[in-house]
Amino acid sequence: MIRTLGLVLAVAAALGGCAMSGDEVVVSSNDVRPNLEAGYAAAVADPRRLPEEVARDPLRKPAEMLAFARLEPGDAVADIRPEEGYFTRLFAPAVGPAGHVYAVVPNQTAARENAFADAMAATYPNVSRVTGALEEMTFDRPLDVVFMGQEYHDFVIPRFNVDVARMNAAVYAALKPGGLYVILDHQSAPGAGTSVVGTLHRIEASALRAQVEAAGFIFDGESTAVANPADDHSLSVFDPAIRGRSDQFVYRFRKPG
Image (cartoon, rainbow, N blue to C red; front, side, top):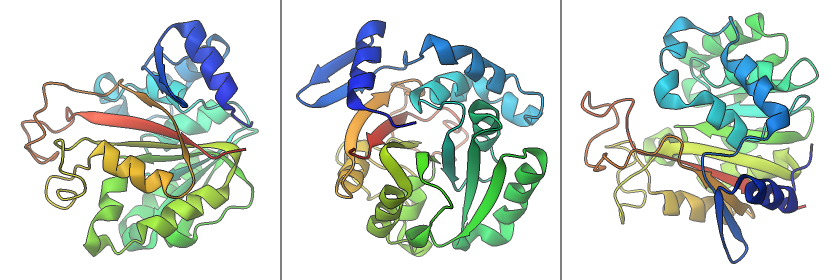
């Protein structure tokens, strides 16, 4: 399931939803390939999803997120720190019985979150839990996609004690050539960089991008599906005034090959 820049360009051009600058392609939230759209819809409608997670769908845009991650049946996917499993429960039916989803639980949160991953593994035959150091994560097969949803900023917080450069290098090593690294996170104010990761739980998209590209990844596009221009980036994402509605960015990076 190797993804190529040529395929991305061709699909984006056909959909008329992209703008290209130099060697970059920035893809809007309209990134659905017709032959996979039915599978994404079925994943969203899967009856095994938890009701409280389904209730979040209008804000989280699951079909658009699946499309942007370009998941295909048979893919091997790692969901990094899935917590209760909103995205894992979407990925499992999307990749189907020939695919596999690794629910990756960091050592730092294993005491609380292993149980969530084990519950998902008990529900979905194609899900397994992997617990360990993020800097050392390995899998029993090369991956097509690595996904990180609203977690990257946490790993930048010093008290979380993650070597982010080594983590990104481990992701790079785990992916197939052409594999995708997809990151969803909360946007900070321009110029904030990584300075508010531990207070507002936000990270500036450009700072995240620089860290990921330093590992050898190529920027492959962004989605505006969960952006919120009304968010002024001044509040913690846990503040009731903005919780669930924060301005979020979704970046897709590609391993060369």
